[in-house]
Amino acid sequence: MPQITGRHRSPILAVACALLLTFITVAPSFAGSIGYRVQFVNGVGLHVVQIDMGSPAVKVTPVLSLRYPGGAEPMGTICARERPVAAITGTFFSKTNLMPIGDIMMDGRLVHFGGMGSAIAITPDNKTTFRRIPYGRRQDWGPFETVMAGGPMLLEGGKVALAPSHEKFQDPRVLGRASRTGVGVTKHNKLLMVATRESISLWDFAKIMLKLGCTDAINLDGGSSTGLYYGGSTIIRPARSLVNLLAVYSDADPGTRICQSECIINHSEVDNYRAARAHEAYMMAQMPLAKGRLDDAVRLLQQATQLDPANASYETKLAQTLARQGDSAAAAAALIRAGEVLLDKELWGEALDRLQEALKHEPANTSALVALPRAYRGLGREAEALAVECELLMRSLRTNLIAMHEGLIADLVQKAFRLAGREAPAASSGPALEGTLTETSYVDTKLGVRLMLPDCWQFTPTADLSALEMRHRYSPFLGHLRVAWAPEQVALERLVEMYWEGSFQESLQTAPVLLGVPSRGIWRTESTASRAGINTRTLFFKRDGLLWVLTLTTGESYRIQAAPDFEEIAKGFTLF
Image (cartoon, rainbow, N blue to C red):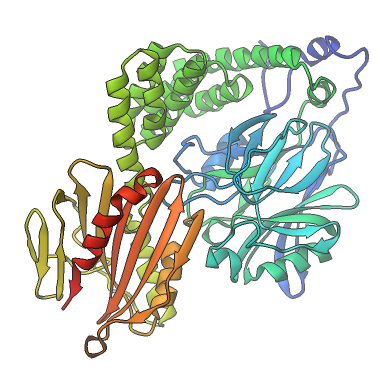
């Protein structure tokens, strides 16, 4: 059996393409089509990967974590499996649910809709375009093979074109100084992937990309996500796991891509060709599976799923293999993808089996719950569909509620103390709430705090000692109280900025900071935010080296109904 050695190489290329074209010249890979250099521009040290987009064997494409949707992996792990020549950090993703904020298209298939930012879009013949995305609108990416939306736009038509607020970027870490990654194209059709460890502004980065010779360029995710890989080595290692990368390969099938470009209306022959290659990869995976070489098997099975995403059996086998490796999160993600394929085919029972199996691997997986009601309704089980939707909303509220993620609060505390030039308390992100707790009240004389709940509300158990959770007994309304250490030197405004960093809210309004009780040194402010159909009201209080965060949240459709309860809870919170 012929061997597949890259993502886009095939032994039956000529046969497939002959179905579409009278004559195709298959160009070999060009030597030197991808290169790497270190360069200083305007006093800033840069790592630059240069790609000759005139080479038909070069392909630039997004790659995803095996745990997508809702999961991340180390950059080195992704690259070891995917084996690109080079890769750079891709689009931003939410810290709370790990979902990308920008559109992602792979092999002409939209795998994620984000609806914001600016995108690099590449056709099968490597024509490269940069495009701003109207916020919240689905785009027609029809002629493109690859799309990766990051942002904001840095350069357009050879000029600096920064307009981050127009593209709905509000994160202070994006707008301020940070380590950066970006991608741009020169007038000589060279694509540049650029990364720097140095903290620079967007304006400085745009001028650097211009000086490198780019005519058009966009910013990509940076900060602690900044990463660059080349030639088998991670040049810049991100400080956290990533959801997606923008990768480049030097062994694409030029003929297949020409077929795609020439046959925009009817892709059936290309689809059949890809399905044949997918089956080939699937069969090749059986040998390493039998010998227990699970890493090799995963790589081949993932090839099969990428080449033929409509085949649920490939995703199912991939999930089984990942489970054997002990990666429950990645196994759940593969089962969810299989379930979604089966839903599209209206195979309701099989889809339900895959989704329920995914939840056995990862009970809190929101993506599985999103798909589950459709399977139940297909089987005529409306009551179960409604129950899942209610549970899904509560899980979504918890997932999107920043204060509920102890790790994010711990990061905030560490950053605040670094900003103040002090050591953060080592024990935890905040003091333990050890006051008197009843079903509807909490009183802590040591910390000087009282919270009274209205009728039909109750406190619910939580393992987080620095937080209290509360919910309405009958409606999907959720409340949360958090206390965290906060140095006196750091103003409440800055703490609130850090709190919302990376949240990518669709709308975020923060009231002015007010002085509460002068004799007690209480400062307070309030934010309202919405994201993905969720409305959140957050009150912040700062006193005696502590930050109190009271959050009240529900679905956007329940906002008016919940408003009186939320107002009563806000009034029931007292620092004394």
